[in-house]
Image 1 (cartoon, rainbow, N blue to C red):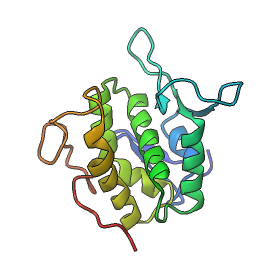
Image 2: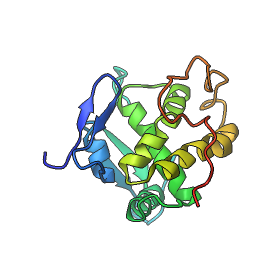
Image 3: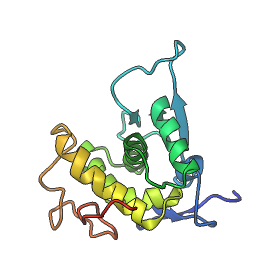
Image 4: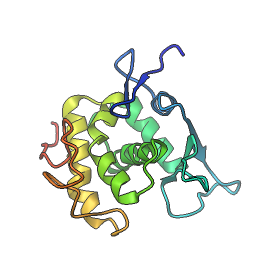
Length: 180
């Protein structure tokens, strides 16, 4: 499809042709569908900000559901070019990255969370952020949100030099200053 990225099987990421992709293209690049979820009464149901359903065979569906508020925050993030993102925008980028990890076949919340954090800067760049804003987003999430996650999402194995450290560029544990 014109304008859509291509999947890089060895890493689970794809390279966009234009250097920037929109939210839909990010997920379509994984060969998946992206849905906004809003209940008929206008509210969101449940506590999860997003989810991917897995079949009884353990294979993930080829779509994710992301709640309405996170979709709005992602749209705001892309409209602003990711410049000085709000807390909600940074969390929404991470939710998209986390659910993408599930769509790639990772069922474990701990593994998905850690792998997603290591890819948040890349996702932010794909959504239009500059390098310093993207690195700050990843670092902020690691320092501010991750320590308060429930044990179902957090592990001591996730950190610099730990078992879940993939050695990817721009890891969240490298402190990044807030861009000016």
